[in-house]
Length: 119
Image (tube, rainbow, N blue to C red):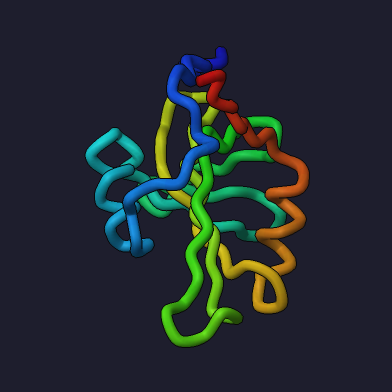
């Protein structure tokens, strides 16, 4: 049974006031994205309870890119994830040259929502 909310009302195409990945993680955690995920052997794994998900079992409801202050190559991307069983959490990867190929392959297969503002 799919327990994802699929209620993405807010546009996520605007820049945020969040300047650091830590600040963004704090905001997402307050919004219920408390779990953390990692990619392991082609599956997304919850660090809280070890639950495993395929790309079809998750949706990235938003994502945020961050560049290092002193080095533009120090770039990361943070995904806000919702799973088919209703868990909400985050997945972090480097962006570009330093990205983890296993994470990149998983992300290419999962659904990523990008709600555009109509205002």
